[in-house]
Amino acid sequence: ITILAIESSCDETAAAVVREGREILSNVISSQIELHKLYGGVVPEIASRKHIEKINQVIEEALKEAGVTLDEIDAIGVTYGPGLVGALLVGVAEAKAIAYAKGLPLVGVHHIEGHISANYIENKDLEPPFVCLVVSGGHTHLVRVKDYGTYEIIGRTRDDAAGEAFDKVARAIGLGYPGGPKIDKLSKEGNPEAIVFPKAHMSDSPYDFSFSGVKSAVLNYINGCQMKGESYSQADIAASFQKAVTDVLVENAMKAVDEFGLKKFAIAGGVASNSALRAAMQEACDKKGVKFYHPSPIYCTDNAAMIGVAAYYEYLAGTRHGWDLNAVPNLKLGER
Ligand code: ATP
Ligand code: MG
Ligand code: FE
Image (cartoon, rainbow, N blue to C red; front, side, top):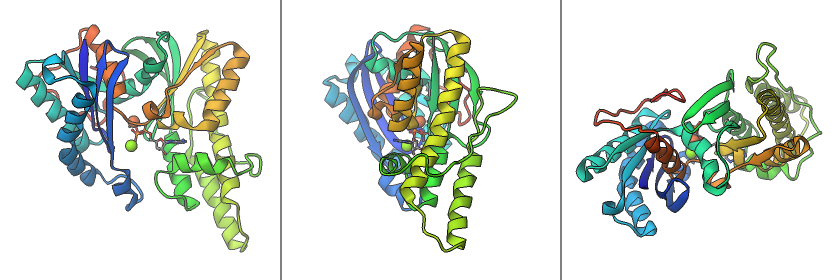
């Protein structure tokens, strides 16, 4: 089975060709970051327009790089939610048009199922069940992956997503957008013990998260320094903030690993490429004798290869969408 996958849920226009679920023949990503940087974040209307401009070219490139024509494609996979509605619609309309014209099955994919499935690409031995921490720009979910396509969300953020917190703190200390990779880099020059930022634990759910408190604490710290006319170290703030966030992510994730007795743990989403988070998770898993899985950075942030992998397992499970497939901006994980 060879799948052409399309992803356009946010600010990356992406297409990939995936064979038998785990072999990536091509993975083309056209990022709009440079464009949105000017505004300090993603502007939905601009994102949709840019997707329309780029999508045909990106798909052509993906086919060319894979060395296949549309005649050799067996199914079309596409992200249909969650995400920005106008952005999603571009990918969904394109996928429907190609599938209709070529008489191919259409498989709609949940974006977060894609992020989780990114782990299958380089870890050929990984199979459910396992626990997965999804940390992206819009989501922070602790997920029990019971089987391919079968998910139970056991914990989630009550407010900001982890990536969102990275981006907001980066903006506050003047690092610009997107902040995650910049905080990661600058933290290497800072002291993670320099400032104690709060770590939120929810008394009623050991697996839930909250990142608005640590974000506010960083803002208050900066304001305090400015009012006293004191200078502050950007690197120390970055490193201390990063530690506060990763500590909580590790603690809650390891509680879930213990609770469900699973010896496999994976991370997914843009923040999963954070070097401090990876190191801390690796250490925690080693201590428990749990195998730690993570995708390479290119498969952590938005891409279509991960959508192709998820589409393959959905295809095997019999998922087929009709020509009425629509973008669902608030699609729930596990819904079809
Ligand atoms: P979602 O997947 O929830 O819809 P999204 O697609 O916008 O959101 P991703 O592409 O998965 O999110 O990830 C982007 C996020 O990852 C941004 O918030 C970015 O700052 C963060 N990020 C990327 N690299 C790193 C890093 N090295 N350290 C921390 N955060 C990072
Ligand atoms: Mg993005
Ligand atoms: Fe994403």
